[in-house]
Length: 291
Length: 303
Image (cartoon, rainbow over all chains, first blue to last red; front, side):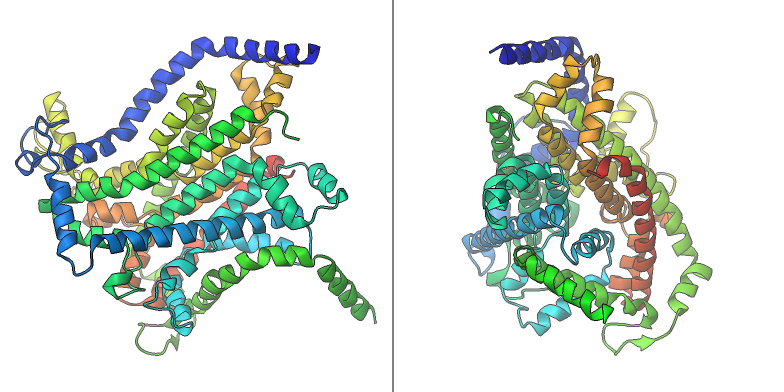
């Protein structure tokens, strides 16, 4: 009882001390945030501007008669393709979901082991993963292509999924975060007779919501944007970004449609981001002592 | 005899840890097939003359000697990459941290809103709008704004005038640079046990600076390291944004980074050997940079 009142007092003191400064911070963040949002705001405005308003002088920051013409144009171009729009959407959803699930599953398991277990080879694997992040070469894509050709998965939907399953970035993020968990917690679970697999999913992961959710955002975002037009040639395997890009590519004259495409592609990642952040906040609110 | 004993111990220890190997296996299989093998295969390409059609021909170090002694544009691209890396690396890193920290202080409800605002640029693919903002005629948003307030009299060619292309490209790169690092830092903040702040308050921590130095930074070492690596990678490999914005090649090669140079030789001229050598040099630079930073952050990352 006394302990809990003490804690409430302490957090009150903390909150009280911060009141004045918080207002200043909100103003500062809002102003910087406006600058960050400006291009996105303009994109959204331009996606609903009628064509004749796109290139008038002086350029306006708003539109008086918004229209959905650009979106309609985009869908019309998409529809004129032999393949129905729903097929592209299905492909994209299938690729995104499988990549996100596989990537997060494999990376979190591997990250836990690499962060918390010492075994022959663990050090080497840890450093290889960081090095692989630093090695960025456009020649890799050719070699990847050759590997996939050997596996005979070129022009197969698998070519869009398999290369993105192992993400050194996601693993590195999780590994860093898991390394903060006290060893004692894992030891305790081990003494209780839990196997590594159970420790990972029942004890470590529920404790790692922020990192896990961040990894989901990264995975979803990169998977949603997978194009792979050099890996699959059949129209029925192509994903939404490829199709939308084709509809929007005609230089500045089709600026409105390009904007509509950009807005259209941005919506799902933003929704996922919001859902995922809400998860984090909720767990934060409920979690008491986490050890 | 001793060797055999050692090998036996190793084998025992591998057997003892077989659960560990089983758990990293799914990741490692994909990682080896789609990352390690292609990387290992691409390294020797730098010592060859390879046009993707004929069989690579071994040329020794000649790609590297050409790069260092006769490719003047490469030398220029090194300089431009360093300028890029300075602005989008350390500067953006500190920005990431400051913004993540400021957001942490906000009321619970506002946190996700601001996180989304600052992260959104790295989700959006909006080069077209930047082209319109920086557009060289009076219709460009920036030109029209500056002319309205009387700062300039005639439109500035932001995207084609050699004096401005680098600045414009860096602006856009900076705008999208609050990406993985920023989000990881936010996660790091969210991971800090609130009990620590309370304990700090009881032990006499008075202001936010002390909180930052004694509580926040020490408990965020791993995330700081992750953000540093991501920032190194993104700032040194910057180039796509510039290419999309100021065109390829940019005026007088003034926004020509090492990655753009590699793109030029790889995908435009199909000289894969040369492109591979360029990327190798970039890798060495990033590797050294990473070593330096992990030394700087070592104090916080050894847990």
